[in-house]
Amino acid sequence: PHIVSHDHADSIAFRTIVLSVCFKRTNMTSTSSDVHVERLRRMRVWQVAYMRDVTRVMHHTIVPRGLGCGQVMVGRAYTVSGPDIYLNALEGIGPGEVYVQGGCDDKAAVFSPGWTHAYLKPRGAVGVVVDGGVYKSYECESSAVPMFTKFVSPSPAINRKVTETIGSTVVVGGVSVKHGDIVMGDADGVVVIPKECEEDLFAHLEGFLLGNGMFGKIASQALENDVALTQEPALAAMFERKYSHPESYWRQYEPWWQEWKDKYPNITETSQGTVAFYSGPSDDAGPSGSSGPSDERGDDGAKRRRCDNK
Image (cartoon, rainbow, N blue to C red; front, side):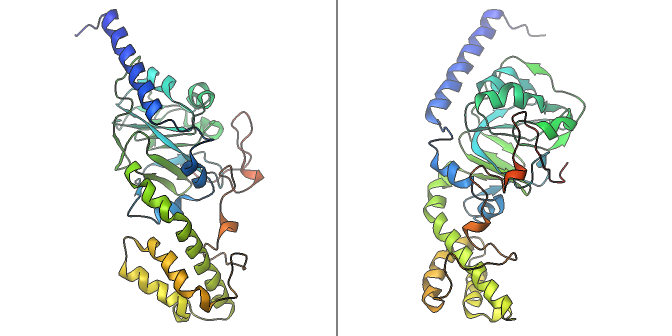
């Protein structure tokens, strides 16, 4: 077998630390200054996944573990690649980051809920997404940050002191994730906003949300009047826009509302909506990414109310 000298191991460790610091300097995204991440905390994953031409949705095999009802995870990807457990990667994560590990095998577990308390939460990390397994899955209920994994396994992966793969591009749930991409997850699953799509998405985000909310309010009025949605002129027009732009129809909500708003002077941002559709800011998540006080975690990471995900 190949024997690695202590000097060589120390050299690898030093280079890895330098790489980690460089990545952090170029991707520094504290929760107080990253305006894009902060904006997403008030949204749901389905809203972001709507924007399918600028987002990537992970396969449904990447599932939430012990997630609180209404809880939303959002942060910047801190990427690691490989089938093992890497101590320098766990200790290198920073504030506002999501631990994203790809290159896992289909047998061993590369993460444990206890590590969210030992490594992630003390460093300000906000979540875990791995294309592999978790062991001690019964402890996911008390994890300090949200976890999304592919499977559970009683077998921990091999422990390694060092990996040089921190910051590499990984594939998780069929989606390519780069270091610094925005990663967002809730009970529906996980969506990724690639860095190269970020400015485009946020340039049109508020217009989309406004138009989408107005659609819900007009739909509420139509339902109250026993009018089929496709018979309400404005809604019918938006449906046609959707049919014509199947991969990017979220972009159509803003120009659609600009076209129709003068014809619905009684519909405003404060108008009553309907539970059938998104109807504006009143439907958004709270600032902490949860839908109310009953969804909050305690200091020990325990959640007061749970969704029924396993």
